[in-house]
Amino acid sequence: MLGPWLLLPFVLFLLLAVTFGAGIWLSALNAQYRDVMLTLPIVLQLGFYLTPVVLSASIIASVVTAQWLPILALINPMLGVVELFRWATVGTSTPEPSTIIMSCLAAALPCRLGRDLLCAHAAHDCRSRVAE
Image 1: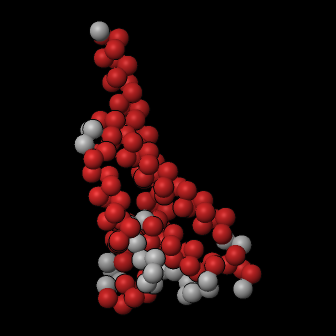
Image 2: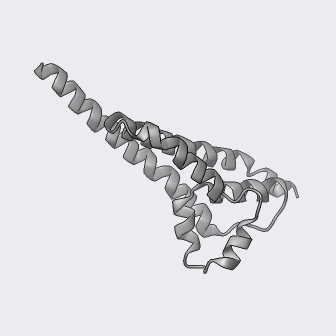
């Protein structure tokens, strides 16, 4: 039972990467479109309801076909993180590798897109201030 506990630093890093990626992407969108700030609480509340914290993802996997599970994991990247936490701490069944891979992709992709959006917005803002 000691094995899964050793992966907790990786799970914490994945959690931080997913939240940082979502934060940097949403802040880049908020810098460009001010209405993002108003819709963010609604989107976060939906994300809280769609993340299977109380029920296991195996229940979701029994309802949804196997081909839709990676898509659900990409839509909600916290699915893989919660399942990894549950596996490492409580000792439930091993999470699907596709959900973990999609959580890693969902952590890396918003970081890259958010960085690109922030750099483009900063470059445009600097050019407009110089032109004034």
